[in-house]
Length: 250
Image (cartoon, rainbow, N blue to C red; front, side, top):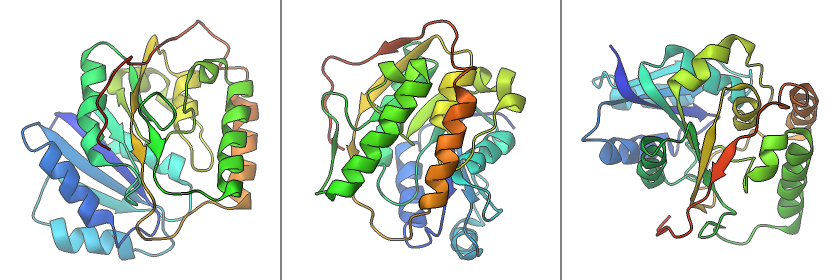
């Protein structure tokens, strides 16, 4: 069965927050033809066990446990099983407010191939006080992305994990997508036949619970990933559309 929208939730030990995120997505998309696909990368099946117990009666919520292959490839696995004509990707740890899904879909309706939630565009922000080292790591990762991927230089938040993309933009290059680690957006920007990208401001919330999957190994994978993306990213220019004024409530 084809659906209008597939929401892909890559998870890593998010059993404390997954149901609240799913409930929020269901409420926002209740008038649309949608499905939710949870792809869990945790060492144990506890997150998907929670999803099974809560949603085994709802055919629009599906899940699978794989464990340990990386959140970026978990997103691609979600794409592989998705029935939607559009994919929306967000984290399930409470840091990505699901209510912004509507704004992303609106940008696709307006002609964008990819719509990205940004912390750094006018109106976006990071909630709470990040320690200095987190800011340095984040900005350093963004600088490396912009150095390696020309299109990323036009994006205010190339490290965003919250975005929507047309399925027919992904499918022509699906077999060539080889992300490593925890970031998938740069792979799509570099390899997919993208003409227009739109940015949507949002508030990046503080983590509610659960464990981060990031560590030194993930950052090393990220650096290697950028090296592989340098050549395929050098293609035709891409238009990036940033709204001049947009109301932001999260």
